[in-house]
Image 1 (tube, rainbow, N blue to C red):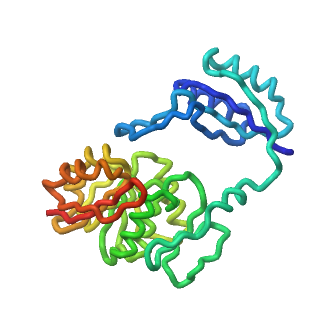
Image 2 (tube, rainbow, N blue to C red):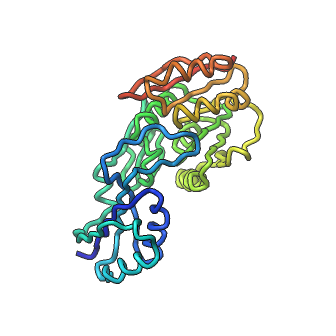
Image 3 (cartoon, rainbow, N blue to C red):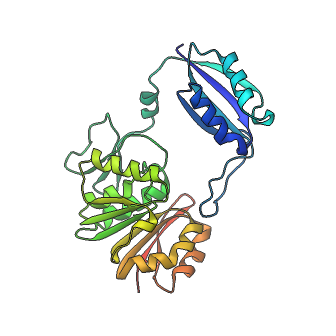
Length: 291
């Protein structure tokens, strides 16, 4: 058993320091989970919520001196940062392959596919996006991403200028470009998302995709803007979207609960004639034209 898993429950204010300390002390990876079965609802714009009690799980080499590691952590961090510290052995297995058992090629609409690394494209002549598993967002498995991808498949933006606002992994930007968009701006507030988008564009040998921060994306109004974020930020961004989309251009919004759709459509009504075009589980997708 060549791996150990260190499990620590901690308050949210200690998460960042504890994660940094574990990585500095040799942890191969650190993941976060809810330690108290606490649901997290929609955050405010710019907010990154954590559970009131967060569980950190650190992956360690089997020969790690966990007693010395715990001592070092307690010397670095306040007393209340560490509760009980548990160590569990992990069986030897290929963790990427194990994850991939639950992730396989997926089709969206008639011809758009996401194909993870290690798989052959089921339909080689279809529109195939090569995407390796990474962060959970942006792989197509979430209903909000899936609805946007199906919309793009049904409304290919051939010859259009497109913005993917809140691009995450860049999957919508890649899909738009592969479906014929002339150019795509991939916008996100997180520099890591911009790097992920650039990497995924390179993996698919795609040019014509420009990752950029919101303040750096000055552009002539585009033909299509896609934004898969959350209802609160979408409502706050409505005036900005009106500046970014040309008259007659299209806006597609996702990340919206069905109970939030009417309020968001009302907030955008001065500039867009949005309608609900899809629903999957409790999530909906809105689309419409700029006045």
